[in-house]
Every structure is written in structure tokens, then in C-alpha cells.
Length: 103
Image (cartoon, rainbow, N blue to C red; front, side, top):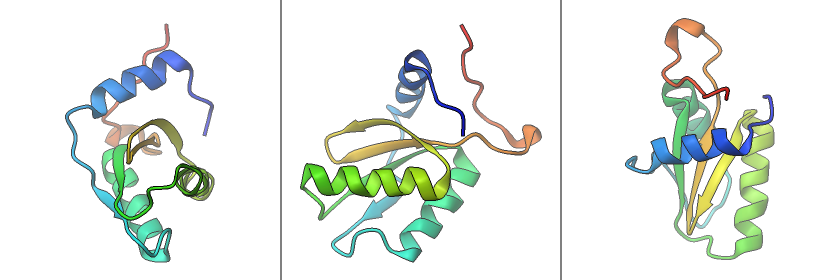
């Protein structure tokens, strides 16, 4: 995925403001099922929120978000408290729901 610029991340965070988390990460951390859920949600919605329920340590959340970014080929657009916002552009132009500003 191409690197998002700061104004694009800000735009995406604004879109995600009213959204509810679609994936929750519990005490088991990043499992295969969680990764499958993240992949399916990104494929459907392009922009998702992931909530950390049991992971309260900042370093652990950072490690998990880095792994999600790498494995799912997506971008972390923001981290607010225990909620991370991820974006991955739909590969099929017909199914894209979000158009990023180019400025």
C-alpha cells in the first residue's frame, strides 16, 4: 500500500469518527481468527476501527498494530485510546467507497 499523507490520514480519521469498532482484540491478542476478521472487514468497508479490550499496554498495542499493518497490507490512520483505525483501499475500483483527497 502507498504511504498515506498526513492530510489523508486526518480525512480518514474524520470519516471514522462516527463508526463503531468492527473487530475486538481480547486477551489472546492477535490470533488467526482476528486476522481473518480484520481482512474481511477491510475488504468490505475499507476503513475500520479495532478495539483493544484486554491489551492496555501501549507497547503491546503498538506491536499488534504494526503486525496488522504488515500482514493485511493496510495503513494505521490513527490510534485513539484503545481504538485503532485502519484503512486499505479496495482493489476493485467498482467497489470503492472512499475517495482520498489528493490536494
